[in-house]
Picture 1 (spheres, rainbow, N blue to C red):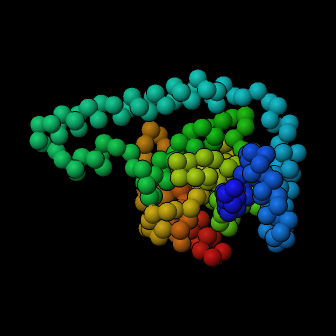
Picture 2 (cartoon, rainbow, N blue to C red):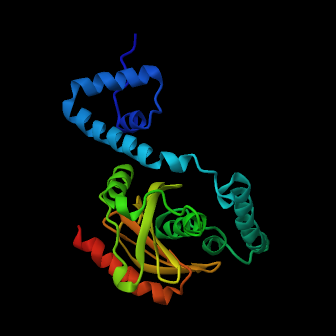
Picture 3 (cartoon, rainbow, N blue to C red):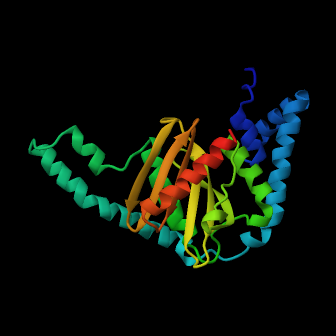
Length: 258
């Protein structure tokens, strides 16, 4: 009979999420019984999950807004694909004709790693959540400490909510979002006119320290950068030149907490 597999951090997180088979769950419980410090840490995560379920139970029963339904998301994906299809076809013609080579790749294909990917992920999540008039966030400002603890646990890094009040933007809440590079925190703000900005935060496997870069596409602008292995992207329907001072402020706040 082979020995049980060692218990990994993935197993512990799956235990918190109740995503283990019954056999593996028993193995994790035996491991926790033999490791009191780990049991206390994981017990804290379980308690956080239970508290979030209790706080968000009523929300879970609400109907899904039409813009977040499967049909709307599929249509949004088709729109993005249609946007890129002419450029891809044009690039293929150039490559076949010998008029373009590897230099065309950066123009044709969306970035898949680094700060470029972070910028696109932030913009995509802004379009899905910050534009939702009914439920843009999962946890509101009254539960900010709970939100910070939750997203910090899930992204495995200490995360702080930037304060943009001095610039006229109040924090309206946040949520955990999914990206191709793992979970990320999304914090959302609005001003007196209802204009919304979002700050997305996630760990960076590549480009762990980068200067700020501006980006704009389809009516959204943003400023993205990375500091000590954590990426930040400030996004909104505002020119990048106007977002940059806010991004500078966010970066100063982040560096004060390092």
